[in-house]
Length: 130
Image (cartoon, rainbow, N blue to C red; front, top):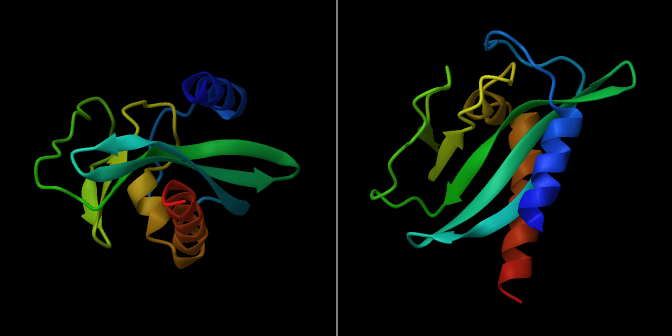
């Protein structure tokens, strides 16, 4: 059910762009995050970065954040222009899709975006531990 919802969200908000931008996305940035499951002792969270500008909301970056990074996680991302990396102790796996204008890892490096993701992360972890 969650996967169907994610596909619907992606297809509704996704806007195709030909290349990845390295500057900060324009507009009001928000995050949406969903718990995907536990894998290799890590909690996997899907993260989408949305930009709202002129009343239009677009999904500009997405991927999976592996909380509690394990060295056994290997990137399968061979098609994206974005590089996966460890950031603040978590493994950031950018979406393999070339449909996004920005890389998730680059968006999370902006304090404004990371603090919104961090709120999502703590909300999800508190729900898991209930």
